[in-house]
Image (tube, rainbow, N blue to C red; front, side, top):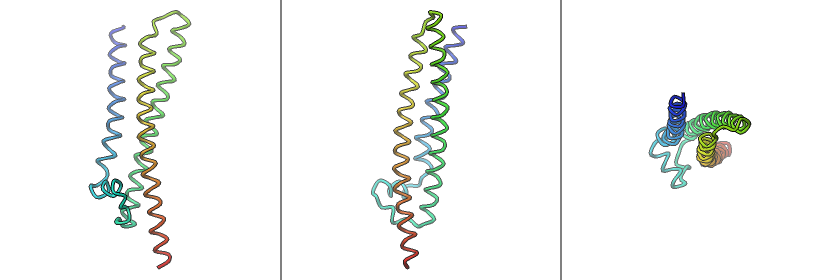
Length: 139
């Protein structure tokens, strides 16, 4: 039974890291080279309103996915915390559960950092969208 539990934990950990990696990779793959350059160089103004809206849509979708992953991570932390409390009550071995909780917290911090970066990009793109709309109205 311990062997199955270890495999399950390893499989879960691999899945979580895979999800995190996909979140970081997906963000890069869903934007075009010119859009990446626009964020890096700060030249969002070279994009059309439609391009800006497409980028906003993609960023919002990425944020939604990341929030869902963070919610899933939070639930797993809660489950492991409850398991830890149970192990403490019965005097069981808690090292593996503590280690897993720490791994999940580290993963959560990485996701929070990615979410902060994504929110910054959203703010920049929305500011540019507002600027373009104001220019269209005043024209």
